[in-house]
Image 1 (spheres, rainbow, N blue to C red):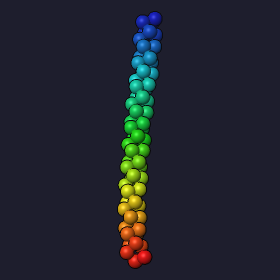
Image 2 (image 1 turned 60 degrees about the vertical axis):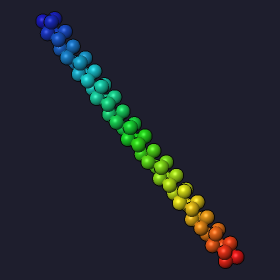
Image 3 (image 1 turned 90 degrees about the vertical axis):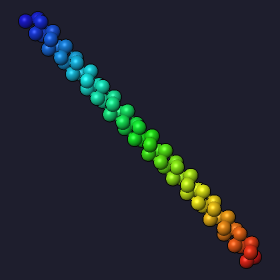
Image 4 (image 1 turned 180 degrees about the vertical axis):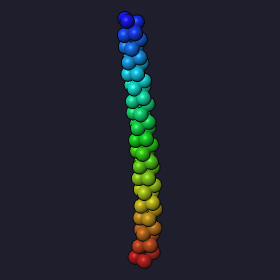
Length: 67
């Protein structure tokens, strides 16, 4: 009887460990996605800033010519 109880407890512990591993993997995946999104946002912001800078230079050049 004790062996059955021990085996049952071991299965429960293994199930808990697996659950912890699955949660860890899910957390890692979520963190990776958030990191990717943040990197994408930063790249988009940088590209927007560069476009704004180019546009401002063109406007300044046109004003100088027309000025």
